[in-house]
Length: 303
Image (cartoon, rainbow, N blue to C red):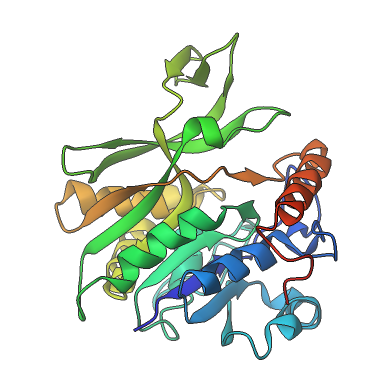
């Protein structure tokens, strides 16, 4: 069974501004999502599922979905604040979405095969899709609790215009993930790459240290784990009182690893990430995409 690509497209780019998911960066107005989907099809993915907000469905269908007709099956799912398990109500003052793993849960009724989760506004590059696509395609039928994460080398994921947030990963001798710790400030500091720790100190890390770019490989049983843990998350009063508390993918993954419920293989990739974290990044991304087109990696028009 061909794997499915699940794109998280419900967020607004707070540091960049606007719906950067719909920003045309390629030579013919292609979005970063277009390149991800093109690479995913090349890597053997058989279906695309978008998680979006209901309020920009019409715009999304018109500007995004139409172009994929005839190329790959596409489905839409919607993330909303009130999409909660029975017995729970969204706090009246909450405006922030419930986080990336809540977004993943929105696809539980349409995804019945191994699937890869990605951000819609990150340019992952083709090797990353090949690596995760092969892992998912090679899983035995009915496989459970055997997941994967593409571990980008941190030196391949920086912005030239400021610090970035990355999940710094540790792994065991079998290349299985042991921890992923979110570091909100990572950048080069006088040469070496460093992250700022909880005490405000800069800690150096090797350029090849694997980091999570939110490119995960799961099987459908992951939805069941997520539903159960989301109930626990919502039952904790501090998560309901904190209007910015979020149910992140790494939170769920760390729990499954710590409890030895699942393993997560860290897959190495030579891909160099780029994306529009800051508005100043935009021209650099346009130039990098044009270079890839000039080199023949991508056609001038994708779809």
